[in-house]
Image (cartoon, rainbow, N blue to C red; front, side, top):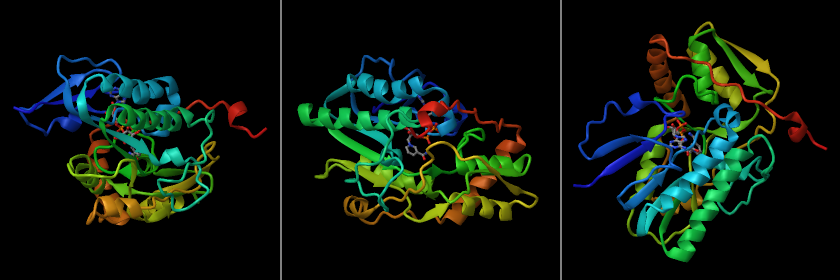
Length: 307
Ligand SMILES: NC(=O)c1ccc[n+]([C@@H]2O[C@H](COP(=O)([O-])OP(=O)(O)OC[C@H]3O[C@@H](n4cnc5c(N)ncnc54)[C@H](O)[C@@H]3O)[C@@H](O)[C@H]2O)c1
């Protein structure tokens, strides 16, 4: 029988998110990806272990680097020779991009000592580790660069824009927009993104080796998201707060390559439908008393300030 082992240390994940899965092949192990050990060698490893929400990764940057890079270094030892290693990288590798939309060939505009660097740079370094491992040992590497995925099962205290707005709308009603809200993002509904991941990770005949952008290429500003949620949930209002240091001004995937590698795949769920479905899930969770307070990050303004 095939075996599927899910390794998660429950840093930002919730055990209850797997409660509905009853599959005799699946084992859950509560452990750090960078320390997990096993007597088995695996045919395939999918490395998604990392917080993705800025307040969470900024609060524990060393742990974030360890999850991504340490996790990949450790897990590579558990892969069979010529096995397949898939990794969730991010649009954050493009930093605050100077070109739009961003193709995979764009090398990005990233600050390697900035407040987001533990996340951006550990993703970039892990990409390097995996592509170099492919080159030197012939493992099969599948790396996706995801753009702002949202949807049900996000924790209500996650702190990213959509989940933040929904949690706020359902509690005190004040939607906090950082800066003027003109930052553009490309919001990908989770079901669309998971469909793309399964097509890419589990496709056997593939000649393309390289990172692949996956997302919805309809860019919508943060303020438009807030206004949409303000309309959906009566009694909410928008509050403007000082900008977050080095918050990227824009993000939009160039999907030319994605459409060649995954013909027929498109992000079909409109932003409006996706937010409505996510709102229903949040209504249940917040109604059951889930915490909605994301951690507050600690910024070193000396590093973030221009010199
Ligand atoms: N959601 C997005 O918009 C987005 C965008 C780009 C990349 N990604 C990447 O996709 C992956 C999943 O993101 P998500 O949005 O589901 O985030 P999430 O925080 O909801 O899930 C991350 C999971 O990793 C686990 N984890 C963290 N560190 C770990 C460690 N050291 N060992 C074992 N488990 C660990 C957490 O407990 C959690 O279950 C991450 O690698 C993230 O960087 C997500």
